[in-house]
Structure formats: structure tokens, C-alpha cells
Image (cartoon, helix red, strand yellow):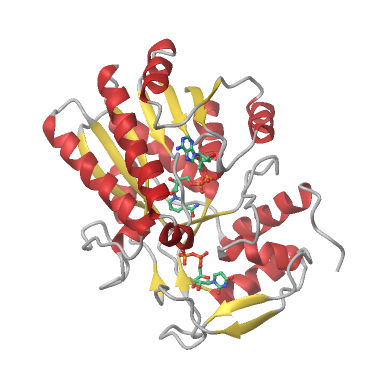
Length: 338
Ligand code: NAD
Ligand code: UDP
């Protein structure tokens, strides 16, 4: 079992991964600047795992603090979730995105090099495939970026590839997540966006809860079976378990690896609305509006490589994703009667 540093560990995917990794016996240290998360999430994490997880409040651009944290906790491997993640915001604030994401990754690599920690899992994204040239997306699909967020992910992936080439001690996995949704079964942790959600699932949840009047569906004239956009939604607990499998893989393999974490199933917006209504028993009123600029019609994974290399496959279904999202939202006390 390893001693792990989880950057961005108080956030959505980081906290679920911390639970999974801690439950299977790894010793986890969380590192986060709390720019998009809270101490309440940390307390809930402790409650789920039944022990206190050490937490360091810090920015990943603080190389000295990172290096001293790696040393004082004798860290063996790092899982790097910390970063900014909104596509729209990245177009307005590209400097913030390159600073947090790219500069943050460089700072982390410097700290790891200083302390001779050479195992790293990086949170990448299906956005590095740009506009799909074919489907399903496998890892050999050409990469490109259409916005600063995607470009920051791509730049980090390329940097990590160079780092792995420079020294055979490095063991690096770039996990390309598709669309993580859902929450832990305890409903103590989940996705809680601040302000009006940009993403489909948290928006649907707020409409079902009566906090937003109507879901705007961004276009129904795509070349898809029902005309609405198709994505590969994956349960966040499956994504979390994918990290445990990747860590195990890296204990036996060196080099740089890009691996999709997706289900392989494409679901349309209307299918998501329908599945959510069934899981929650609530209505999700919607209206169709114009396409969102920059959206692609379809994006879903070829999940073969993760199965082959990691022995990992997504196990939870769409009903689990919708039901756990709804349970988490109800537990936060925000759902109003309908
Ligand atoms: P999140 O915002 O919930 O978590 C990120 C965490 O990192 C937050 O707790 C935030 O406070 C922290 N953080 C941000 N900048 C930091 C910095 N400079 N120093 C220290 N901490 C910092 O986001 P998430 O959904 O959990 O995403 C985690 C990672 O996965 C991100 O890198 C994101 O780009 C990537 N990803 C997410 C999705 C998704 O749909 N959620 C999809 C693909 C990839
Ligand atoms: N979508 C929508 N209304 C919303 C948010 C999203 O119709 O309020 C659609 C969007 O056009 C896309 C799908 O839902 O087809 C998933 O969008 P999301 O932003 O969650 O993920 P991404 O597009 O980044 O994969």
C-alpha cells in the first residue's frame, strides 16, 4: 500500500477518489487551496472513511510547501486533480487557467523531482480529442484543443510525456475522463457547483429541485438519434475506482500512458432527462434553445484500453448516476417540493 498525496482532494472527483483509495488501505494526504471546495467536505470525508485524513491547505504553485509535504509524509505517489475546470470561464480568464493548471503542474513536477517521487496520475479530459474525427474515441485519436482549458490539459499531457521520456524512473498516467456525474452512496460528498451550473447533470438536478424553472436544451438538430447532444456519462465512483486501478498498473509499469475513463455508452440530453425523471420521481421541464457555441454533436469513449491495461471497467449504470445525484442534492437540503 502507498502513501499518496491527492492535490485537489477536497474537490468533487478528488474527494471520491480519496474515499476509494483510503478504503483499500492507502494512506492519503489531501492538498487543496479550497478555491472551489470547503472544509465541510473534508469533515464529511473523515466521516465516510472513519478516520482523519491529513490535510494541507496550499496552492499547487507553492513548490516549497509541496516539496516539504511530500517529504514530511514520505509520499510514494501523487494524484493531481487540482486545477480550474470551466471551459467558458477559461475563454474569459486564460491567464488564470494557464497559471493554475500549467504552472501548477510544473510546480508539482519540480517538487516531485526534488523529493524523488516519480509516480503520478494526472486528471486529463476527453476534451483533448477536440472535435471527434471518428467515434468511439480511442487513445490514438489525434489531440487538439478548442479553448484555453482544453489547451492547458493538452500542454500538461505533452509536458508529462517529455518528462517520462527523460528518465525511466517516471511512471505517469494521464486519465482522460469523459463526463463524471453522481455522488457517493452516503450522500455526504458530491458535486456542488457554486452559482448557476454549466454542466447538464447539476442543471437537471436544480430544475428537478425547483431551483431553476426550466432546462434549456442546447439544440435538437444535431445528427444524433433524437437530435440532442450525446456524451459518455460515467459515475464518479467508477472514475474514483479507475484511479485505484491506474495506481496498481503504475506499480508494475514505467513510462507515460494516456487512458480513457469512460463507459463507451453515448447518451443524449433527452435520454438523461428521461432517466433522471424516472430515478427522482420529479418532472424536469425543458425547452429547446439554440446550440451552445463550441459544443460537439457526440463524444463517447472506446473503453478497451482501460479494460486491457488496468483491468477496470465502469460498473454503475445511468440509474445509479441519476439516483445518487438526486440523493446528494436532497441531503444538502436544497430540494423544494413540487
Ligand atoms: P473541483 O473544482 O471540484 O476540484 C478541484 C479542486 O482543486 C478544488 O477543490 C479546488 O479548490 C482545487 N484547486 C484548484 N486550483 C488549485 C490550486 N492552484 N492549488 C490547489 N488546489 C487547487 O473539480 P473536479 O470536477 O473534481 O475536477 C478535478 C480534476 O478533474 C480537474 O483537474 C478537472 O479539470 C478534471 N476533469 C474534470 C471533469 C469533470 O467533469 N468534473 C472532466 C474531465 C476532467
Ligand atoms: N447541455 C444542455 N443544457 C445545459 C447544459 C448542457 O443541453 O444546460 C447539453 C450540452 O449541449 C451537451 C450535454 O448537455 O450536449 C453535456 O454538456 P456538459 O456541459 O455537461 O458537458 P460537455 O459538453 O462539457 O461534455
